[in-house]
Image 1 (cartoon, chains in turn yellow, brown):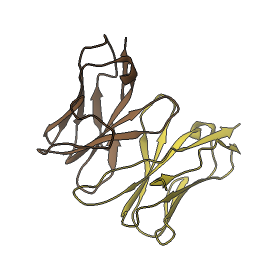
Image 2: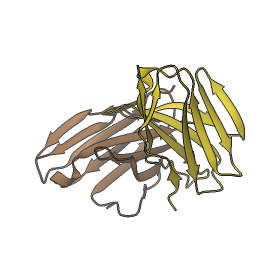
Image 3: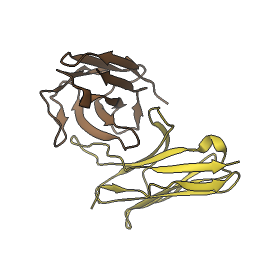
Length: 112
Length: 114
């Protein structure tokens, strides 16, 4: 089983719709979870971090975490063409040997 | 968010030479730094994790003698690709983290070995 699994997509949504991106992880001791956005040819940029079960909202973005199910998601409301990118999920395994492992990412296409 | 500066943004080198890439955290102390490699249309592959003042921990399959990582201070880590070959051509990205906070990425370095 891969440490982090995401549907590679592409996920295509019309402008203004809600985009739902999902991620499952295998390490039960992961404490923190991060969503990054990566435009083609660029390095990733941090969008959201979530540490507790439940929802966390930041503008048009909502991260949802369910540690029992080892599942984290990202909702993008009112999707814009500028949101078209690859979205990467990364759980963090805490401790001195902690490291940040990424899934393959989900490519989102928002069509005008 | 915090700023991580990576230099150079792109480099072309001859086969057999070495290339050094720098990663600096500009406004925070990076207790942990990560180095990734990304091939076209593929995900980020973690190469190694380094903590300030300690030896880097390399991922399985990454040659530590070929990819030398130094994290001598809380604001600077370097990756040296030694005896580079065309198959080492890739996008190399560093990431830095302060304590248990979020990790921020440098701009990346596109290495082409000819």
